[in-house]
Length: 301
Ligand SMILES: Cc1cc2nc3c(=O)[nH]c(=O)nc-3n(C[C@H](O)[C@H](O)[C@H](O)COP(=O)(O)OP(=O)(O)OC[C@H]3O[C@@H](n4cnc5c(N)ncnc54)[C@H](O)[C@@H]3O)c2cc1C
Image 1 (cartoon, rainbow, N blue to C red):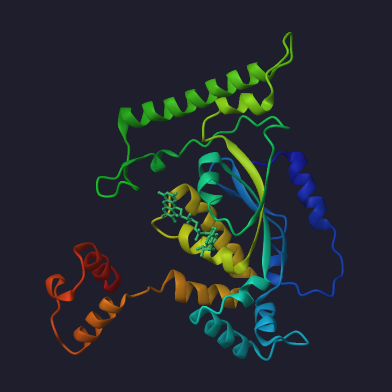
Image 2 (image 1 turned 60 degrees about the vertical axis):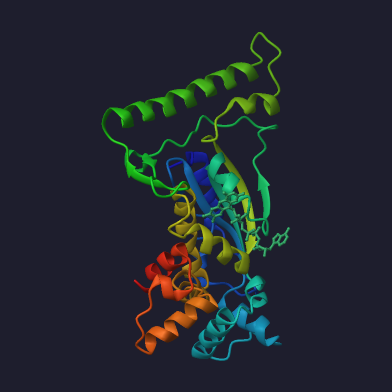
């Protein structure tokens, strides 16, 4: 586990104190609050705070004076309607604040999601830990031969051993030099803001990340997807588990309409209509490019 015993004690202390509130709380989320869930070899996600629940989405949609809840069935139906029709602002009424520890190369992908508030650990002010992401052997994959942006089978044998050795040794050597450069033992010591440029992109960083539910679901749609890089996908998968407990109706609707659903072009829809009438449509008669047709066939299974 990536947390020290002091950090773990801080979390336990925080979890041991509770306060009364008039605000809506989500029972499913309370059990996650403050707990760190490990991701990759040194990373984690943990919920630091949240606002709202499924009822808050309905409350906003109905611009209600009270809690906004009519009945469980009614609420679920409303949330599904909102999701289906891209009426997204009610989902923005829920927010989550996460503490995330992640490798810098994952952070570079993550930070592209601009509709969030971020505060990152300062490597100008503080010394980074000797923590580097080293893939587990079964994730040490070869370059994909069909997708320039993907990976294929796991490396094996001598090549796998050598790659793992390079990754580990290079990380440790870079950190040794980092430590040596910032040391003020018998020398002035290079500024931390400069010494850090020597560290590779697999070094871990941390941030607080606050986002509303609408934009979080957008993030999860892209990053929990099979096409996302494994190292960010595992974070998204862990967040999905938390969101499923926090706003179960919204998450179920999201899984149904976004994760499990698909968007068809007008051309593709026309092809489906022709197929339903019994016509045998091929790529050549579909009006779709080869790539579109391949993806369309993939969708229909
Ligand atoms: C599989 C995959 C591969 C990728 N490959 C690459 C790559 O090769 N190179 C690369 O650079 N990126 C790449 N990306 C990143 C991608 O292009 C997006 O930057 C990233 O997914 C964030 O999406 P977003 O902009 O929709 O999210 P957010 O920044 O959270 O924005 C959410 C939505 O808000 C709106 N919005 C936010 N800011 C603005 C703005 N300034 N102007 C207009 N509208 C705005 C847009 O509608 C946007 O969809 C990849 C992403 C994925 C998932």
